[in-house]
Length: 526
Length: 110
Image (cartoon, rainbow over all chains, first blue to last red):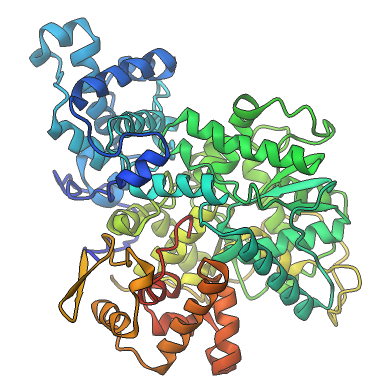
């Protein structure tokens, strides 16, 4: 592993001094020819790639009007400069969103504007050279496509879309990223990001059924490939194997059980994630989304519920209908698609779930809004539902809840540092440094409010925090799934608890309880 | 990268995961472990052997939960938790132990 300095958490977040080239060395492994070709991309950098890259750029400008607008409309006001977690964590000026955009804009000007074609030196226009490509590869893999900068940009320039376009151009000339492209290949071959075969999935689910029965005395099923089930659950495959994800999956199963729902997981589409969004490939996104439609039709379900996954929810909520729709074969009385938090929230509002909130009394919770849920989707039918639903659920199942600082949550939330296809070991320095703003906000509520655990509803956020929190002196199990909290507190019919459940499951207001002894605490230093 | 064992060059990927699973043997596992700064003892072998058996059966590494349950069964209650596994394999049982066991690198949001 590369050795690097872990940023120190201070009393508040500093805007760092600029360190030119501080992260120029950071680049992920390049995809092998095998991984590239599986997705229909050239195996390696092709001859004449410069012209082909420009041709692809032109194609994208024609396909996506937004890209053209983003290239043209920046006025260099600087509002975005201190909004990116990677800039705040590294000090590298090319991690300022405007500078990241300019890596692409300089090429745009050279080939697609009058001034850049004739007077490139006057307008900062540059030829597409290997040096520029190397910069693209490095710095467009230092953007987690979280869209925080776009919230603050007065023109709404979305660096996520620019970085997706840059990655698509690089893939098209043979320079793809190993992490994303290997995973997309696995989805096509084995139906999920992990490469978990159906036999292993079945064994894993049966094992979880045993665990739940051992713990609660109730036979809770995690059904696989049940034709005629009402609900198809598509969830990130990390939910089947990783911690704390799997505790969330157990929570979904208990909620379905208590609701008396007929539901199933599909071994054909055992993955909610759609990494094709990270590489900007519409074609790949379409193929991955289409699997879910086919699974839903083959199984004859009436509803699709999406598990705790950030970007999967963005793809499902925003793009499924155009990618793989219409979903007119599903029951129109329910949202299409429906988030697992909407599902659980509805049941709580209807008073159908009983909780013993004291089961979570050993924790004081805060909530990390995942970027793709917060800034690119919604839950329920009111604006801001994606912020309220998860908080309502936490407050319905936990007595102790505190929000982090207002400028670090909801639409202003900071990325976990591992989103957008960057959750890979070869980018560990970037991931650790990019987590700085979130860790700073967590430290504040840990010290001031006794927060012990942070909940999230995204598989990437959970894995990223479990990995990077120890760098900042927090325990790796300080990150939890929302449905893990639900699972802890839920009292299923017939379940032996030895205690009386609380009668009122309605969400409560934030409590001002005495802070408890923190189980996680900020470190003295790295 | 590559490993050299008894004069033979054994190919691996950028991070040291074997390119060809079938070339794995105990000596090679010891060599990979050494690169990871791990001195293999019986407890490490218990985990590595379980991973290989599981992979043989299911063509994938087990969930952490499955691994901790298996360790609990064979090594006792006090060792059946992920904290113990992290003591054995500080960079994470899923990835580091898989590498030593000669299995492919786990991918996905993990």
